[in-house]
Image (cartoon, rainbow, N blue to C red; front, side):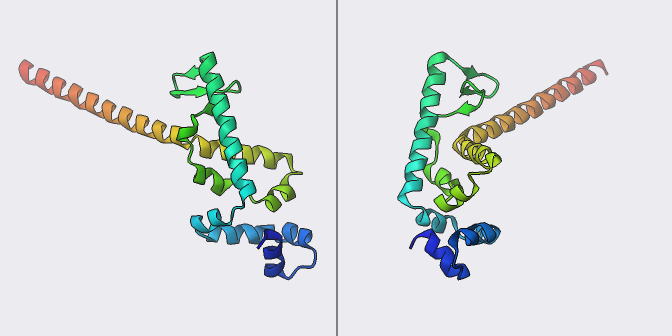
Length: 166
């Protein structure tokens, strides 16, 4: 069943475009109430192909950044010419990206809004680079643990020095 028919069934609307625009917030709320598996099953081949293309574009930018040596030591990753992090296709989780890709009807109803495209690109890029965020969190956690260990060692040394002076 295509998504236009679903809209027509849900709202008994004669004009499907009006139903999409008018009840967009209701549709989004219903989508958010569903499980991830239901959302992924509903995605047609077109969206799956789009995800594959986006992953390939990210991989091309990764290879380009690797070739030109654009490595950010601070973030511990390669970056594209705009300064955005890029990752290898192995690090991208296909289903995570597919879950955030909107259905065609939602995309084309919002594409007129220029900020929508920028927000969508940022969301997709964030999902694709989620592995970097996990690595950053782990690195920060390790850094905090190392700092705590260093502080404990310093306190122990000071306590020993204070004992020797006494």
